Image (tube, rainbow, N blue to C red; front, side, top):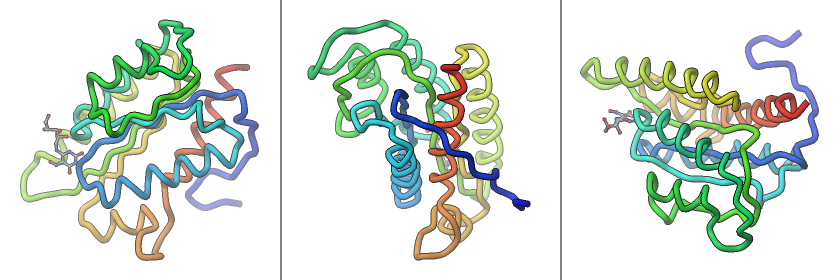
Length: 190
Ligand SMILES: O=Nc1c(NC[C@H](O)[C@H](O)[C@H](O)CO)[nH]c(=O)[nH]c1=O
């Protein structure tokens, strides 16, 4: 039996469209987390063109960035090649450099929200963590689109590195989030 992480399941992600929305605080940790999630999406058969990555300033902005992306993606667009309505709207909430223009468009089957909150000297950490987590839960229940919780809430940089698999230590939790997105995306289509 498995301790901690979910027992693995195999799901075919070839028909899925998935977004990864990441905060830009603590990017040395964010980067491997996003890479780990994307790696698992691709390994499950999700097409590169069906993976949209965008960013927002911090974890506090994740709920609104995810909600706006989901809303925009539900506006069907037939554009191919050029940025879809989803991408153009998303660009207004993120820097263009982080935008990957997917050739496909249409609703997302799952969204992974990635952020790294590291406890500082004040209560700021607690308030952001609480608001972001509850906000993301509300977005997924309001929209019916699975939002995978990819926010690390850690007490120090060492804990963050261990959960991003940095320096060859620990396990990259981004991989678990990618697998969860595939499973929940497939189940959403059933
Ligand atoms: O404070 N620390 C952090 C943080 N603060 C910024 C906040 O999310 C928001 O972007 C600003 O308050 C502006 O609204 N955002 C993080 O993702 N991780 C942190 O560790």
